[in-house]
Amino acid sequence: MFIIENYSTAVFFCLITMLCWGSWANTQKLTANNWRFELFYWDYVVGILLTAFILAITLGSHGEKGRDFFSDFQQASNENMGSAIIGGIIFNAANILLTAAMAIAGMSVAFPVGIGLALVIGVIVNYLDHPLGNGILLTIGVGLITLAILLNAKVYRTSSASNKVSTKGLALSVISGLLMGLFYKYVANAMFPDFEVPEVGKLSPYTAIFFFAIGILLSNFIFNTILIYRPFVGDSLNYKAYWQGSFKSHSMGILGGTIWCLGMAFNIIASGKAGPAISYGLGQGATIVAAIWGIYVWKEFKNASKSTNVLLNIMLLFYLLGLGMIILAR
Image (spheres, rainbow, N blue to C red):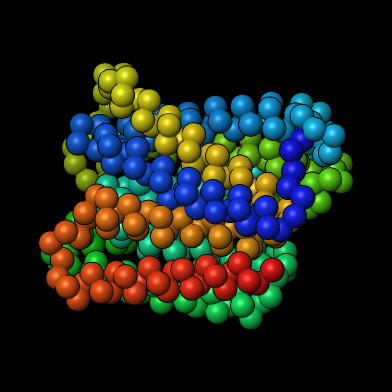
């Protein structure tokens, strides 16, 4: 299977993850006017599963090192398969809430608050499990990113009307972040730590991502069905509405899932050299990418005051400095 040989390449892969994780949501924004996110999300999940399988039978099955996907699948223990599936279930709950928050509050709010909080929790949790890297630099980086989260929340509070919908968007972002920070450790714990030396019962990164995607799919029958009939905002839907969607609407969802899954795969592959805490932390720097999309492309704060724009730029600066500290930690 394909694996990374050095730390600098791992950082590069994490930067690609940032771009993927920070950009997939644009596919939902492109269809938001005529396609509810609850319906979009089903295609998004299909995109994740298809991409995970394609990566497993290509990059995960070729090369001299590691263990190919089908051999790895056959020897995997129930405990490790279950761990990756649990990771998928937790991620799916968090991501549905994030997508709902994005539909309500916009990318420039949902991502910095939700994913920023996930970054802080994820770095701490994964570092405690696999203490790789300089703990002091990681702490400084997480501290700077926490300041950025608080600034973003303040911006949102001061620039949006104080009504139930605005409060709901921020609340969903926070709950999403709390869950999002926990899923990665379950996937990481299912894999053998040295990708060049397979362990009996443990999973390769590609097999882990595949079972992770299975967890997302299975849980979506419960989580997203509830949202379709009892949405956070708007009228209830039914599955008949899904089959009435246009080719563009369905393809945008699948494309969004593909983009996100590529980012996940690159991040998991990078964790072999960077360690789960650093790899996850850098990947969740996607917050910066998403905030830039929301602020400068989608103009989500176009009517904001000059002081608000200053706070947004300071928020982005804190994020960049925090990510720099995380990179230096290894």
